[in-house]
Length: 112
Length: 113
Image 1 (spheres, each protein chain N blue to C red):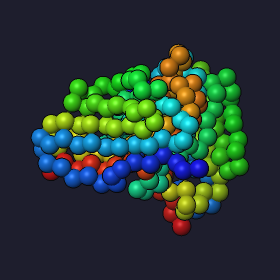
Image 2: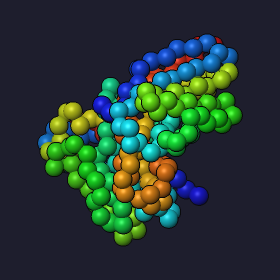
Image 3: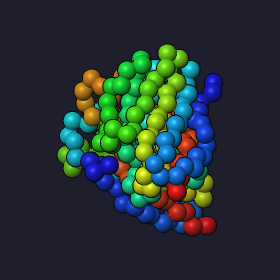
Image 4: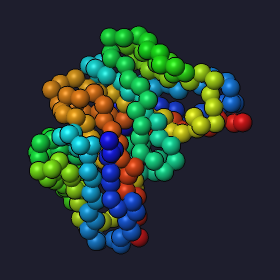
């Protein structure tokens, strides 16, 4: 995951907004993803953004992409205890064959 | 529609042994991916199969191998197990090689003693 970097840990209070950040290195990345992993479970795709977009909103989730700085963020509004999980940022590189590179994951802890 | 399934859920082996992990993709999906999630290392890409062929391989030694069967299910084999192979092994599938989304299974927890 050295091409995709994330902070390891984030703690927020229930009801506050959470912002999870990610940086990537490959400017040719076509899609950028956010996955959620709950304890003992596999990864669940939350949302993804195409590289020619700046923002994507889906209910409580807002994804912001700064392509110039190669920075991706996931904002969770009104964070709930059920949002506690590990969040993975991932990039899909350009080219005919799909290869997705994941970050190390950010553990989000929501304090009641 | 059933999701990606993996077996076994847990596997305990000793050093030097061989482990076989299995994955069934979502019906109709032709691509299967294997990832290793070791503690503190995030997800590391292992192998990608599509239509029975190995399409890409991550930076892992040759003792990590696998195959994809005609029904698109897949096996991951790890030979000469080492302690550091202890990890959660995740399988994912996608509709084809250009699909945007990978659907993940629950994983197999491999413990090497």
